[in-house]
Length: 265
Image (cartoon, rainbow, N blue to C red; front, side, top):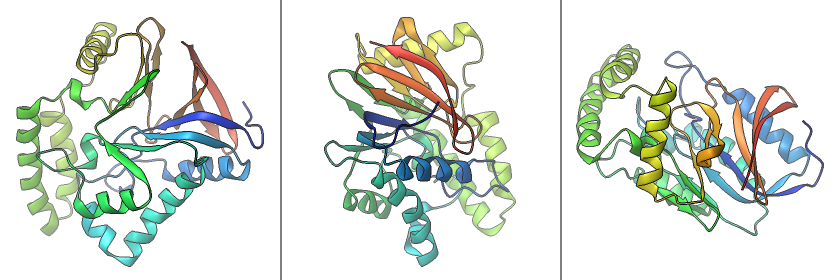
């Protein structure tokens, strides 16, 4: 698949970047992501609406708020968001949908400095973005309720205290989280259907397209009008809306892209 120069699309969806994360703690594809964003910008491809569908900034294993206060940290924020901002046509909106890894707040709010940074750049911060065609939500709501979320954050904050003194605890905390706090992501067909049926009910989906991230599974379930944007840890994937057509695209190599699925609604 190739992008035509100067093409304008309705929307761009991407999730689970886990930006700022150190590769010594967890793998990521940030280099490849920048290659994608630079390629789209060079081709002058623009989108009326941008949707960041959660877990964009990694805030679980360290404080993104503290990093933003540093000159080097601010440059790293700018490195990502300046590229994203360039993709906006200026005729629509830019949504930052809060995911579980974006925050360690009991109320699921972004940290004050990160929130202020995004608002200054024109991003709308929300838990769910919705219009007459689609609903975009991170998806952790299908695994957490208010009580399990608060309990997980409490344990995570305790781990943060130890990790600040002993960096090796970062790796331990990741393993601990996946084993004890992160309810097992759906792996079978039955578990997957149950998970998305729950999300559909929670969001009052009706006949709209439901777009989520969270599980890192790049997929489309046409019968349910459901799409998962995948991630930038293993999938290198994103979704583009062109009218009533939603295309799931995977970056296979630099400047090379493969259309994995198309959902027409």
